[in-house]
Length: 211
Length: 128
Image 1 (spheres, rainbow over the protein chains, first blue to last red):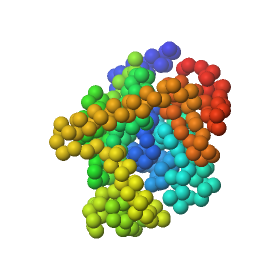
Image 2: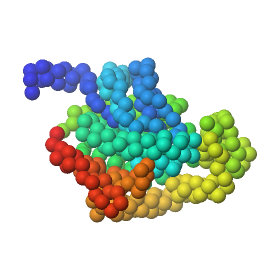
Image 3: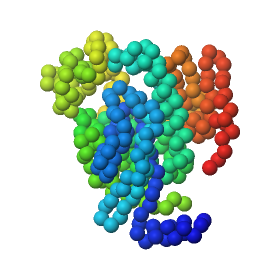
Image 4: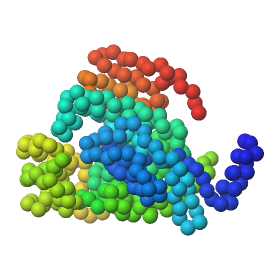
């Protein structure tokens, strides 16, 4: 560790500022890009990527660097990484329903599969994760269980954000009782509900130095 | 694109009903599509959604339901343990991904038509 690193580490410990890479992970259509856009709009005034109701819209990593989140005197600088949705099955037939041609649908399926691999590879570069779940759905899916187990094994700090709490059929309380050991923040990324709670949780969780 | 109520089949251009529920039948599940679905397909989708949600009125019912769903998901994940491939190609455009293997080992092993293709750099990658 160089003298500059030591000095900046000491300054950070006093002023409580850190720069961390935070990834948003979850199944397709949980609202990852909507959340990334909400965070980037709230703190940097720009968006990260396009959203769509057709699953697997994000098929490449999208990044917005140096977003500064503040709460009173505490602040956290994050490089926000929006990732493609992680799925166990990608079938081009599902995209045909949305009016895509067979060729377009097959291309989308191929890119979405590559996107899953890219998203998983990116875990090696991150300091923390927001695991986004859809609060209208059963949280115990292969994807959620696997990501959760892997984040625990990597000892990567993470927050579970239960999205879409403004929708009919949303059960954020169920999600809280489903994962009693973990921090679950119920939000609506689209309508900005409870974002203050999420920012507060991010500051608390991601400012800590990892062992 | 329009939203179709899965319960009664009515199509709405305005997405506000997705939040409020269908004014015709009170349905809460909508499908986003250019081509409205027939009744059979709608019923299939509703059944899928039913399986995806956690039911129960009382807290003990919900806890019991959570336990069951959790056990089912863990069993499904465990089943993948013995599979060597991380990606299985049924046909071009139809893929099955073994997320557990990819996350734990990062190995890209593709299975197609009885053959395994191993992407060697994914196995030789160095640790950070």
